[in-house]
Image 1 (cartoon, rainbow, N blue to C red):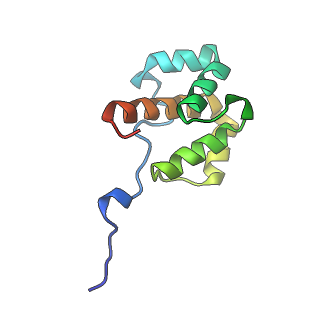
Image 2: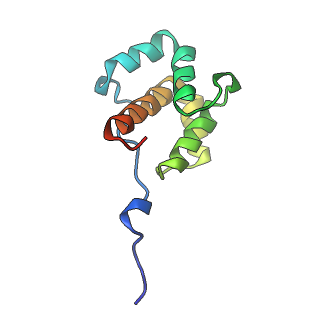
Length: 104
């Protein structure tokens, strides 16, 4: 019999909040709008990366790969090119949610 579905832990998922779901956590949104470099450094620190590297798209790609989240390098680049604050806020919300779920 052929296997047609991967086990659940290997199935791709999406971010737990949408790109523009600022009201899911207004504090993170305000943090990103008032001091984006600080939020970016916080995310990099959460990921165990250096905040001075400046490659926030790369951090998003590493995070997606680590948690098997749908997407592509091209999409990561587009999201960061046109909406870097929203993308970083989404990433921080997802990190915080995974921490609270004990899976980060």
